[in-house]
Length: 489
Image: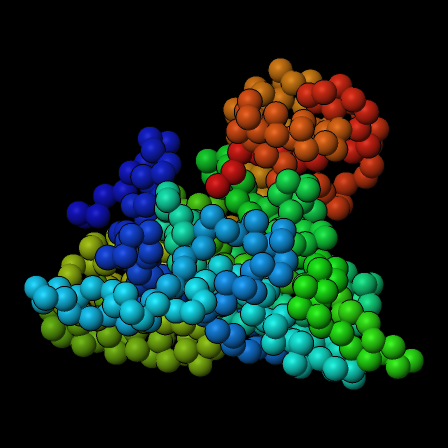
């Protein structure tokens, strides 16, 4: 096959790019730093979106849409927020083009905007300006809004799915009458993300809060979900922020309480993005290509005939169509690749590259035996199965693949989780890759120094770990708990 993939062990970065390119997931566009998500890649994103959107709606959230353009003045109302995004903002300054004397298309200098518009890097400011008009009374709360949108954060160094100047995401923005309710919402979304990423993407995660240095700009607390990739680097897979009353005060969003008093509302915001596509690829894929969990696979089963004559072709495809109809009646996503433009061997390799979980092949001998050959993408194993048993077997196998992928990734995480009690040991284990649990004195100075020396950052302060007195791995000062360090994307 011409689509040769670089081995992970030879060059992980190139391996990652090869899978994206050869599996037809995405490509670089004519706009620097931006990507084209191709139909197959977008179909995977749509599966993610469908599952997650239902989880939001099942917990009372509704979807809306807010403008792509945000007046620059909105960003001046929340100082920490604008500082966090200022260097990444794309700015619209003019609203018209014209032909110059030589016939070139140029910006019309007379069409300058009175106020520059920021291309949405995140929507807190435009949404809270809107909420001021929507929220008047305690009866309007809680307000639980999500939007699916694109955002722009101008990047100098880009990688498909992981870091592009424009990407797709969902962002939730909620308003509440009490601090406790807003914190509860923030944690509820964290639980949704953990559940979604582990059960749908089959990617094991650790979770907790961010340090002050890593906290979202304008938040009181940031909760995060972190995943470990096959190269030993961490990837932030999702965040949920307790915003306190910062944006309510910045945009003067108050509500009349039951007692008739005017109170500022409390807020949360949260989001995951197409970065999850990168997490999916780097967690499960192998040297043959993409490996997809069945829940997300646009094609769960592909049917391929093997024949030498037209009579054999007709007989085999008739049987395969019957199997296809049975599987489709079980809501299994099936395609029938009966085209004669490619040989079976080429098709086998192509669907392995695209990560299709199950391949069903049938030849003349299989017809006589009333059986088919089943191939599993995760284990690369084959098995002959009687046609009469096919529906149940495929359902069970899809379920097995989903669970096995998670178990395999969880085993990798465990094998690449380390503990360090002194700085020499810490540096050695950070260089091995993976998560390193170590004591930290809680200061930004120590965190910054460790990052400067090792390139490792605090990925999370775990929520599910017990307090443990110790000594900071770098400064030697007292510490109350271990935090999780890693090199990251």
